[in-house]
Amino acid sequence: MSDVVLVRHGETEWSAAGRHTGHTDVPLTVRGEEQAKAVIPLLEGRDFALVLSSPLQRAVRTAALAGLSDVEVDPDLREWDYGDYEGLTTAEIRGGRPGWFLWRDGVPNGESLNEVGARADRAIARIGKVLAEGDVAVVAHGHFLRVLGARWVGLDPSCGAHLALDTATVSSLSFEHAEPVIRHWNQSAEFD
Image 1 (cartoon, helix red, strand yellow):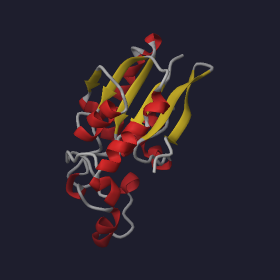
Image 2 (tube, helix red, strand yellow):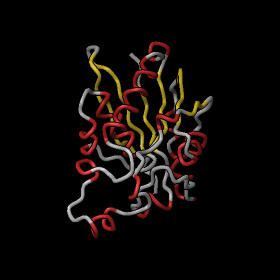
Image 3 (cartoon, one colour):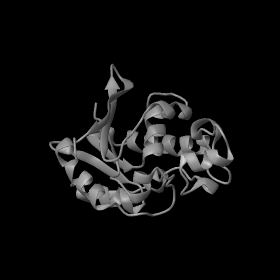
Image 4 (cartoon, one colour):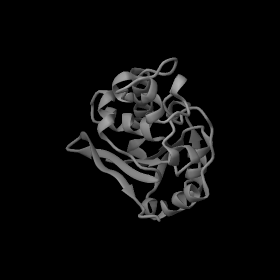
């Protein structure tokens, strides 16, 4: 069976500062661009039947810099809509809501975890239709990809809380004995 290769976008000013970055279309930093280029060796030798990207520029640019071509933009791959918490850090949110935890408490006026999970399920269904033809690459965002990883192995979307994912990392989802597995997670190109 083929693999689904997940690539989290490179660093942005907001990701470096720990700001929740959903729909705000921030560009990669210079470091983020270098991180994206450093992903190239982790993708070499793969023949991708399909390459998908979030429509946000940090993902599209990462795909290009990582050497991926024929990229199809898929709106289902966008990051979690953080609603009123867009642009805020966890510390800032907890200043007004002590003990807040995204995966448990959600966000006001944004997207629910189950809505993010439904988008992940749609992406998995789309990916499943082409896996017989070869590997699939997905370039997207930290929280969304964590939900996608959890849903791939049949877990509740909230289980994504246990799958840390750094910027410009590569993960792979696959099969073992015809059952979905997480083969690799949060693999770095050891960029500094």
